[in-house]
Image (cartoon, rainbow over all chains, first blue to last red):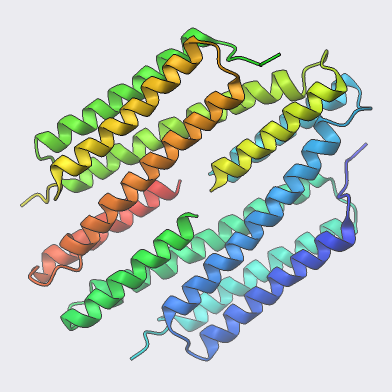
Amino acid sequence: MAHTIANKQKITARVRRIVGQLNGIERAIESEVSCSAVLQQVAAARGALGGLFEELLEDHLRQHVAGAHLSDADRQAGAEELLALIRRYAR
Amino acid sequence: MAHTIANKQKITARVRRIVGQLNGIERAIESEVSCSAVLQQVAAARGALGGLFEELLEDHLRQHVAGAHLSDADRQAGAEELLALIRRYAR
Amino acid sequence: MAHTIANKQKITARVRRIVGQLNGIERAIESEVSCSAVLQQVAAARGALGGLFEELLEDHLRQHVAGAHLSDADRQAGAEELLALIRRYAR
Amino acid sequence: MAHTIANKQKITARVRRIVGQLNGIERAIESEVSCSAVLQQVAAARGALGGLFEELLEDHLRQHVAGAHLSDADRQAGAEELLALIRRYAR
């Protein structure tokens, strides 16, 4: 069984807010805002994606690794997925 | 004089590609893809924003700090902006 | 029960190697190596500490979160510790 | 001309403090402190190395890229070194 996102609406709203930040960056470039201000907006959007990643990672850990009713095999699989994601993210 | 983005079209295209990645994440959540696959896509989008940040930072450094024809005052201001951006980004 | 480090000798050897890198940085500063070369050595030592952190985090996850014979309460406690460590590390 | 570290004594003292943190980690492992506490100390030492890197990077930028009396060629070389270091560090 594939584990899907727990709170679809809330997470989708968060993704859309980050799309809004990127649309703001595109407008800022278009209207020739200073490159330093554009860079700040890019750093903020990246920070927001990092926060989203961490929230999803926490959900994954709580449900698919630490969940009380998992089989041992599912728990091990969830743990290895988590480790691969952390390694991927730390690059 | 505010320093603006050097290569507007190329940078805008890059921002739009990242918007495309986020739209893909929204569809993945909607179609109940596994949370591990969604997390990988979020990590990839964050990596792409990191790459965009680094490219803009390089442009800023080359033009507004190391540029051959800057006044000393403009160069110092560009350097301090760069340091603030690096500190902001490293958090 | 406190969970202790699994492989004390191996981990200790790794810590000592990083101390060796830092001693090398001190000698490099003393012998007036270029600041760019010193910065590369500092980045390498930080990378080595990051690798050590990730290895210890993996051990913690495998033993104290995903371990087959944990009580539910211990597993939850291990998971919350892990999340706090990831948040701390990502700063 | 190679650019050397500006403030040798202060930077050396900082390196030695980080060695002290690592010696503390070795003792913590030896005395079987919990792995979560060891991980916190490793994250702290990595943070301290990151802070040292940022300070040295700022010195490099101020002296070897933004310095008022550099030749154009030296300034360009300093800028390219800086970019290589930032890329190296962001990995």
